[in-house]
Amino acid sequence: MYLRVLLLSVLAILLMGCALPGKGLQVQNLFDDGAARERALKIADVSVQSGNYLAAIEIYQKLLARNKFDDEVLSALGSTYLKAGAPIEAVSVFENLEAVAPDDIRPHLGLGRAHLFLYRPETAALYFAKAETLEPRNIDVLGGLAIAADMAGNHEEARKLYAAALDIVPDDMRIRNNVALSYLMEGEYDAAVTSLEALAFAPQSSPKIRQNLAMAYGLAGDEAASVRIARLDLDPETADNNLKFYNLVRRMKDHNLLRRYLLGPRPGIAGAT
Image 1: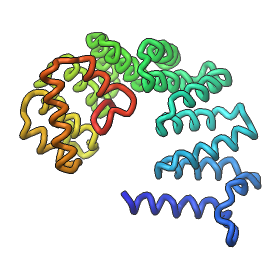
Image 2 (image 1 turned 90 degrees about the vertical axis):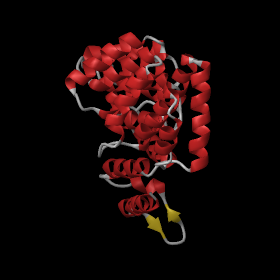
Image 3 (image 1 turned 120 degrees about the horizontal axis):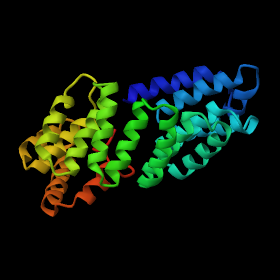
């Protein structure tokens, strides 16, 4: 991970080509020639990939200061705000994008995601519904509607939407992961374990999916399996603490608490994808 970040940082410096002796990197120099916009977007993309969201946001804001109607930049800025954990700012940006491009799917998708992050499932569903009128077979739209339904406790509707998405892309890992979470939130722990076991060790799997499997094992009462899977990505202390939480949720049988944990903002390493 450190090497990846280092390489991305070096790439950003090379792309900028604007270091001044003894002055460091001068961001304003990004905008001094005719190819400035494309160069700035490349640098912002590298910054996002390396997790340097503030640098990317600064670049996007400077570009918008030159053209506040640039829909590509507005979309990128809104998405970056979401990745940075700033949904209120994302809502403002996507509302501006909606004014610029009302018939474009991006502002409606972005607003839906931002309101999911704010745990506002009804509002999120309204925006996803707008997006669905533009692209009825878009699995991101269907997946967003499904999460909103799960968040509201309407798991039957969520599963219909997940099924519709999987009819379009049967092997989509994000949708299949979220179907398993829907089982978890209904207390169908064995079904969730079965679903996640098929995903957790696939080549395209992720720590989030493996930790969802650890949670499913924990909620099902298989503590040994839960800890074994959790420790693939977590240190022993964190894995043990997570198991205590899973045991608490199992004893409380509080599905609303589980929904908040899995579908709310920044739920941790486990959760929806």
